[in-house]
Image (tube, rainbow, N blue to C red):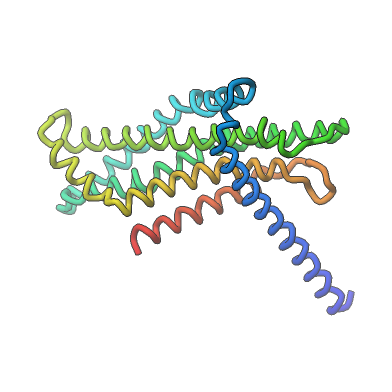
Length: 268
């Protein structure tokens, strides 16, 4: 093959991949906008099968994960708290230990691994089941109505994922703050004033706003990105199985982008 033909073929493949990537990301944005609009409509929660589906998925996305996530979060928090406190005391910087703990553990780490935990345990397996269901309907020749699919299958799962990430992150943050107090002050109530003053100095209005927005966008990314990939047809118009690694990489890239933007907002 001559160099000109080889270059044309390479550019053609690159253009096809770029176009497919653009369509995939556009589908993610479109689905996210549709879910946000439906989530704000009262008709999405009216009595009947729709409300029952939403409540069922809220339970499935939260109750089975809560115990194990809190145990894992508490273990990670205890280890990190002991490391930070011991290091701060050894260098004579104990007055900065609590601030470092709150900034690293509560503001940055807990929302991140709460989102990843829900993604791995609920969002991505649920998206795989949705794609299997669509593939089976396609093979049977059943007409797939996108609006019905969005309301009956995608919206309840997305709402449940958002709720699960927010709840797990909130409860885990409270557990981490309690463990930090017990590690530094023990069971004495006399350190409560100093502790709340140290924690409150970190949660300024700007930091609190960024923290809330970051956690919400984490939950939205975990809810939308896997479902968008599951509901998108491939190049042949079918719902063939996709690589779990590539889908997780796409989700992680969105979460990482949100994390970087939050770091820029907090520290620059």
